[in-house]
Image (tube, rainbow, N blue to C red; front, side, top):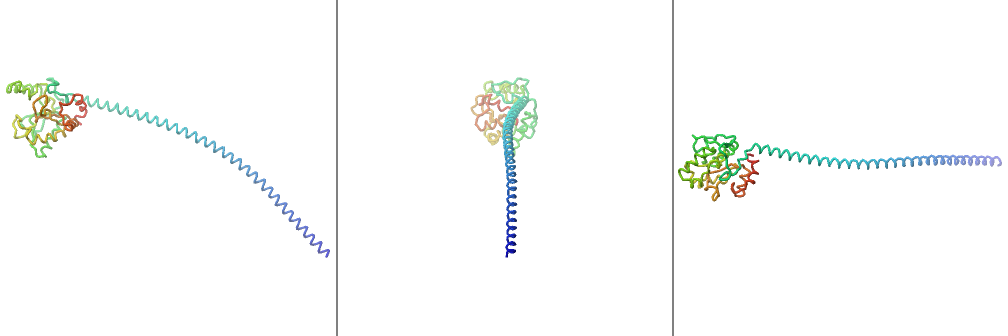
Length: 299
C-alpha cells in the first residue's frame, strides 16, 4: 500500500509540476504576446500619426494647389476675355477697314439725288459701261449702254419678265452730259422750256448720266412712252422691279417731274426692298439715310 501510495503521490506531483510549468509557459507567452502587441500597437499608432501628418500635409498641398489652380483659372479667363476683346476690336477694325476699302471703290455718285438737287459735271461718266444685249432693246440697231455692275441685275429682270410672258423692252439707259444737252434742247424747241422742264432734266441733273437708270417700253408703244402705266409690263415692274434693285424715280405726285412710269433707277436690292416695303420713293428719303445703302449697292 505504501509503495502504491508513494507511486500515486509521485504521479500527482509530476502532474502538478507539468501543469504548473504549462501555466508558467502560457503566462510567459501571454506576457510576450502582450508586450509584442503593445509594441505593435505603439508602432501602429506612430504610423497612424505619421500618416495623419502626411494626410494633413497632402490636404494642405491639395488646398494650395486648388487655390493656385483657381487663381490660374481666373488669370486664364481674364486673359481669354482680353484676347476676345482684342479679337473683337481687331475684327471691328478689319471690318471698318474693309467697309472703307469697299466704299473707296464704290462710286459715291450712284446714290445721290440729282433731279434738280445735285449736279454731275460734263466730265462725269461711269468707270465701266457695258452694251445692253440687242434682244432687250426697243431699237436693236442702236447701241445702248448701262453701268457694268448693273447689267447682271438688269439682265435677270428682263429674262424674268420674258419668262412671265411680258414684252418688256429698253428704250434708253446711259446718256452722257452731251447727250442730255441735245435731248433737252430738242424738247425745249418742241414743247417750250416750261413744258420740257416738267419731264426732262437739264444736263448734269439727269439720272441717266449715272448709267444706272433705264427707260422701259413695250413693242406696242411709241418712243413717247404715253400709256406705259396702263400696260401689264408696268404692273409687273411695280410688283417685281425691287427684287432686282430697281425703283421708280418719279411716281405720281412727286415734287420733281411729272409722273414717269417708264423711268426706273437701280439703287441696289437692299434699298429697293426698303423703299417697296415702306411704300416710299427714293426722293422721299433724306440723303443721309440713302448713303447708308451705298456699301451694299452691288451685293
